[in-house]
Image (cartoon, rainbow, N blue to C red; front, top):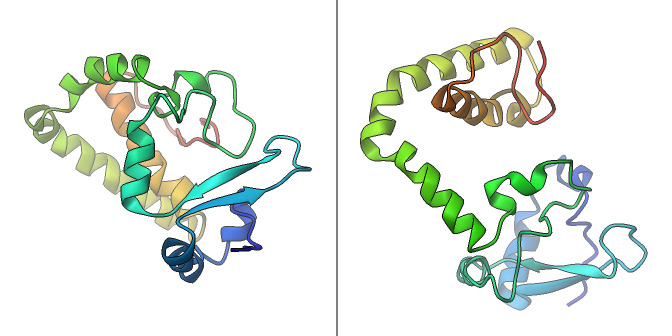
Length: 167
């Protein structure tokens, strides 16, 4: 199946995800190879896995598939190998077990008032802007604020989002 869609280009998603294309791939070619032989970072290409069960199988088979070499389509930034999502077993498992205690139902329930307050502050700031990128202003910001609170990083003005902390 030939697909002429640049899955690796964030600009290709500005109008939203191509759900009809994803549905067709799930039916016709659920593990689809994207050929990009001339791309400086992605050559010769990459696989697009579209079925849930296949994604689960890939994520559980660290012997065949890896996240440790990065999973983003853009060059990794320094330190990105330290992110849990960029690690493979057994390192990933060891680190996940270390932080799992911080996310027990009891601990999470105790955090609810702080999470609600952070959510209100983040949404209020986004509303004051009048327009913007929801992912940057809200969806990426909230987990970063909650994690910073969880590990004791002092609150600050500005944003913590992945676009860079700003004051």
